[in-house]
Length: 302
Ligand SMILES: NCc1[nH]cc(CCC(=O)O)c1CC(=O)O
Image 1 (cartoon, rainbow, N blue to C red):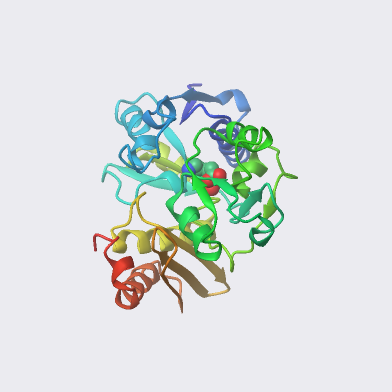
Image 2 (image 1 turned 90 degrees about the vertical axis):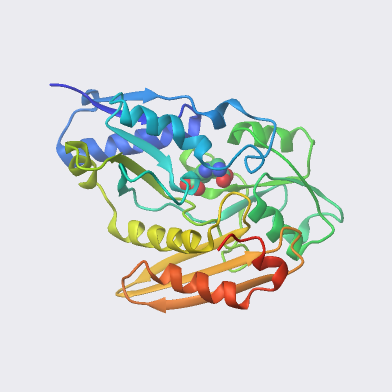
């Protein structure tokens, strides 16, 4: 029997996520684990460690090499953190499935709450959203650039290079670091669109698409597609401090979102409720853009 080739980045988090996808595929199709071959693909983002992603050209850094491997037939599907997948994708590709979403919150490492950070504390992050949200509640903080994988970042805080950092709970949990840091409630720090979701992409119209679609978690897919619709309407990218979180209760979809000036000095937030339709993201984007202070609106291409 030919193996099913699962493409992934090589970071510890990416490999953990690929393992989850492998387990889900095996359970759904009654395959033994050796039916799946994990193919590690090195991406531009993995090679560049010293500059903010926003500076070196955005999210395609994580996807371009995996896209190429799909198109060249080297892999049958590609596993992604949905948070890192750019809003506009090649028409030849399709997100065939998402795993059930994990904890969507950010965790603060180095203090129990934002209020507990000392005056002028140094906080490492490379995320414009986290930077803006931190400065909004604590303008005194010194936000510095930090990159590298989860372990590298934790080591920098442990070594005293900085007082604190923020990491996605989902990533920490998937690496077994369940006891590290303190989760920040989403009403204090709304997460990045698609945070906590793992997606699996395939070529459109190939047998692999149906094989992968069998493991789709429909509620997660709907919520993440809604958050991505908001990003798309905003013309948002890595430079844009945007937070969004959709949730589904019965037949009611709720989307919260906010746009924040990079220095945290002003923002616009909103929420919208509707039926099961990802277009809610478009509607909230328009509402936020209409109400945004000029200094926030100019950050968006739309
Ligand atoms: N940009 C890096 C990235 N992409 C996805 C995750 C975490 C896992 C997830 O959100 O699903 C992380 C690390 C982090 O933000 O702490």
